[in-house]
Length: 143
Image (cartoon, rainbow, N blue to C red; front, side):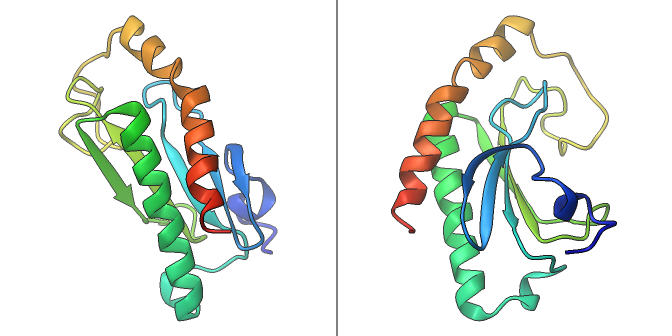
């Protein structure tokens, strides 16, 4: 654990699954309901800091979260990213993208190009309880 690391100091969002090696959170992002992160619990910076079995385990979790997000949120596209430039703690972003989202087709970190209708975002937020359940069910197969 590094005391100056944001993801060592806190969970990184609403915890949907907590395992011994990694956890999954729903990110609080008003423009992107369904945005998840899969976070390695131990402080490491890169995928190659993990043993092969650990890498495979982490990526299996990422794939299961991606599948749950696709099934429930029905996005136009899923973005997977492991950047860590601002937070150098190994984590993967799983982001549902819609052609009406604020930055589409640019990355979610780009300047906004539009405002997504409030009722559309509310409909997507209404899917979050179903998404939580779907993520937990898919990750149960990994345990």
